[in-house]
Length: 151
Image 1: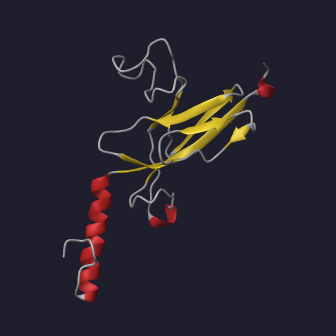
Image 2: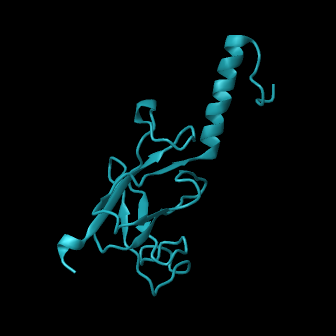
C-alpha cells in the first residue's frame, strides 16, 4: 500500500476546568501538553507499549502513541485505512469529560484526514471548588446560597 492510501487523525487535549465537556479557550481552559494519546489496537483500554508499565500491558501488541505538544495537539500520520480506537492514558484523580464513555472509535476509510478527535479531562475536586466559589459569590450577591450548596 503506497503513501497515497494512508490516512491520519489528530486532535487536542484540554483541561476542562468546569467539566461540561467543551473546549473553550476563551474561558481559560488550557490545553494539556505531554499527555499520552494512543491507538488502542486490542481495545483493552491500556497502552501496550514498552513505555508503559509492562505488568499491566500485553507485550504481544505494540500500540503507537503521541505526546501532546505545547498546544495540547497530537497527531498520528501514515495510518493504513482501518477502524481505530483513539484513547488517552488516564492520570490518577482525573475524570474524562470528553468524549463521554471512553475513546474515539474512527474509521479512517471514511477520509484521509480526521480532525477534532479531542479529549477533555478535569480533576473533580477542582470543579467542586469552582462550584463552591460560585455559590459563595452568589450568596454574597443575593444573601442566600443557591439550592444544592448545603446552605
